[in-house]
Length: 254
Ligand SMILES: [Zn+2]
Image: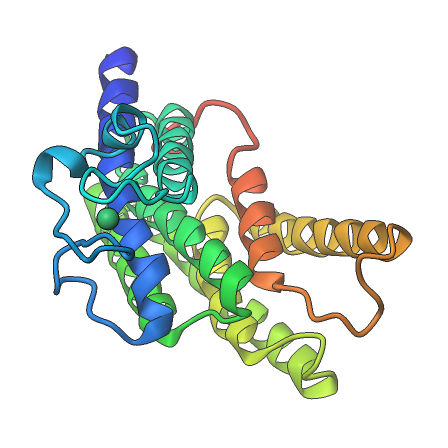
C-alpha cells in the first residue's frame, strides 16, 4: 500500500507542480491562472495538451518550443519534479492518514510561495489566504474524522502566537521582516503546530538559522551586503518543510 501511495503522490505532484508553475508565473502579474491557456512566450502559439505533459514533454522537446524552437526554461520541469518529490516525501511521512491532505496542500503552497518570493520579494495575499483557509479546512476535517480536536487547538494557538511574534518583529523592523511574512508565518505554525508546538517553534528557528546562514555566506562571498533584501519566505518554507519531515513515521491517531 505504501508503494501505491508513493506512486500516486508522485503523479499527483507532477500535475499540481504544473499548475504551480502557472501560479508562480501569473499571480505576481495579476493574471488569471485559468485563462488564457498556456502559450509559448516567444511565438505565442498555443501549447497542445500532448506538449503540456508535466516533465515528460519538456524532456521530449529537449526544452524547446515545438513551433519556433525557442528555449523553454528548465524552471518548469524543475518545479514539477520538486513538487513530485516533496509530495512523495510528505506521503511517506504521513501515510494513509487524515492529516495527509492538509499537509499535501500546505507543501504545495510552500513550493509556490518560495518561487514567487524568490522572484519578486512578495508573498501574495491571493495565495497566502486561500492556502491558510485550505490547510485549516483540511485540519478541521482531520480533527472531525477521529476526534483529535486537541491537535487543532494546539495548531490554532501556535498560529496565534506566531502571528503576534511576527507582527511585533515587523513593527520593530519593517525592513528586515515584511508584512507578507507576518501573514505567511501563522499558516506555517498551523500546519506544524498540528504535530505539536515544538514543531512550530522548530520551524521558526530553522527558518531563522537558514536565513542567517545563507545571509552570512552571501556577505562573506561579497554577493550581498547587510542592506540587501532577502526573500525570507524561501527560508520560512525550507525550514517548515525540513521540520515537517522530522519525527519518522506518523502514528495516527496519536
Ligand atoms: Zn514558440
